[in-house]
Length: 333
Figure (cartoon, rainbow, N blue to C red):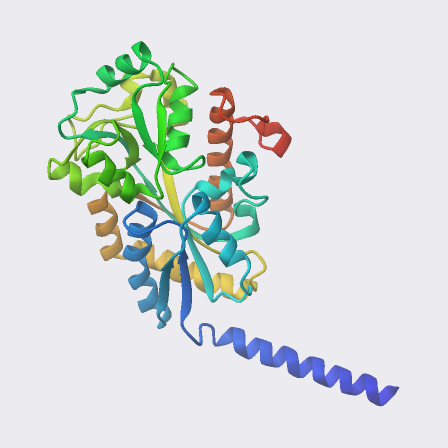
């Protein structure tokens, strides 16, 4: 019995030593990066802008794959079903924070570890270049005079467009027809073709179209006007009740399974934090109209919870949720 115990202890020690060596060498091979939305959308744009900087720091390739579908459920679930070894990174937007409330999945970002909340997209309300609506006031007036007629593009129940609509709809009458697309890219194409009337969208996805005159931005969802677009009104000028919820938008981040070893989490957190701060990525964010956040650890967790609270209660008060957020232990903001 003594010999067996000694042998077991020796094997355990050897296993721990091997594990320590593996962790110390992380990453020893290429990493898989899953983007939970399709090509051309803001999540894809930010992920592909950031990844080269992370690769340079880690000295390994991150192989990016788009796995869209289910308002982000498919891509998120894919990463959750992989080994928690740090070799599977999720690039995601805000959507998983609403999965349980909308019955899309039984998990949210608490099932993952936020390596870095990278940035937040500025939200703009865009219309086709030839739209009859010259101002946001005109669009809102038309919606209220003709409820349920204007076609608004969105990307599913937990998408940026849908949650923005709920936030506005919790404060004013804003009844529209929802037309759903598989991502912001297809929605922008439909908008340019006149197949929908307007869409709340991230500036990072629409900026080049606005600058080229192919789309027109009526308002920015913020408490103040943008320095780059001083003639674009802030939506709070029309709806002052939005101010307590600002800043608000679609945040982007990188995540790993929550059971990933702490040593690997720390390596990834350090690499992504350094990558976000690089001059090249900061310039990239400025060019696409996104605001850097660079949050990890407790600060990232707090940000996730605040966004979830604001959005869940706005959707509930707008009538978009059947169950109160209290049933999911989500406190009022």
